[in-house]
Image (cartoon, rainbow, N blue to C red; front, side, top):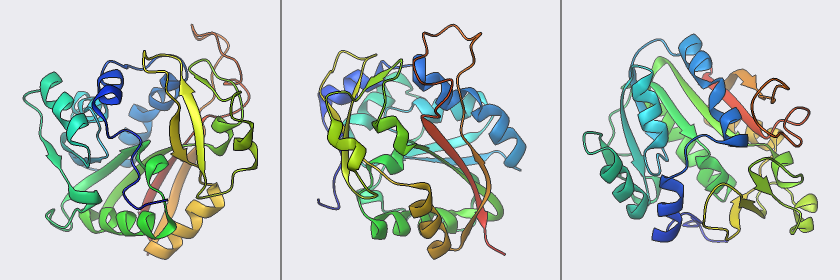
Length: 242
């Protein structure tokens, strides 16, 4: 596996991802974020790391944040600019945030991004940069896929064709297919356990302020499969240790 692993770095996938809103299982990723962010973020200056086609950056703006989006994919950022010409979207080389000033942001948001970052060392490097960018009382909100999402069937995803996912360990490539887009090619992600994320946070000098695992509710208007009993996503709220 290479350090520049990025399954979303192509125009066809960018096109498919740009048209995706918040259907089905994705709804659970975003449903509780407004309340979580409002509770924990103390200001309105934000950076959206791994913004892709700008969906999460636009989401932050709707919450009243003055935010910029950064990503390593030119194709994704091109779509973000088409959709949101007034937004600020910056290309960063291999996740290099060195051009950003330290102690600047109240919030660093990352939605699904670390599912696509391959190694312990690479994850540590980027989390260290995000920790540098936030103010002393700033927060990092990182939304990642639960390891369970790669082992079950969901309203928006299928993994039944990839039984090898069940034996995968932190750092292994796993495959999943999105049902809600025309591009039905398997997405390759990197599975990562809660314990492995804890090791990263400890290495960087971050601590978990809160951890959320949103579940579907029976009265919600989706045809849930496993979402009501197994959390497909994990949301970490991180602060600087000490």
